[in-house]
Length: 183
Image 1: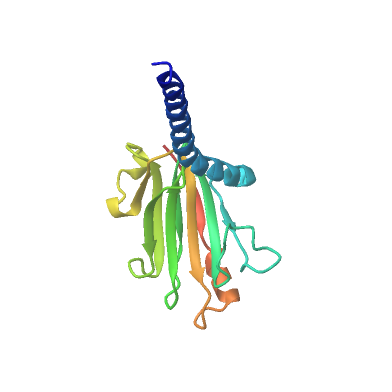
Image 2 (image 1 turned 120 degrees about the vertical axis):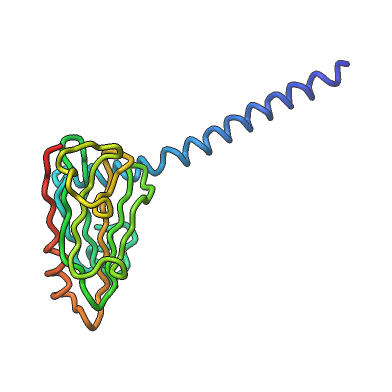
């Protein structure tokens, strides 16, 4: 009987260690996306609900957007829907890849469209999920993006190609506008 006491103590210690490790693992998986998004948002604190335009990534500016592809131009909108519905509009290039993606506060992607579905111009209305804003009353449902979180990020990608060199694509990129509509 005396020999089993050390085994029981070792077993309890191992069980406690496993519970701590599993708890830390799941806590890390849950917390890391929020940390990453909050770091990005804090760098963009002066640009809430306004577009930011990145230059074509190169050796000097490659960390403006995390892990950028040098074949793309990127634009972002760090949004906060606390007081406004946002109207986001611009022009879609016709002979190259373009996309708009929306990410909630924990970096989970909840909306994506690209040039195959959206032609010539785009116009979207970004609102909190369950919004009953008067600003959305006469807007077609396919133009409304409902955000599951109050804060998040919109990301635009423009592929630099022979059809659209950097200068022309940059002009389209800078044509993206954000209008704040009252809730």
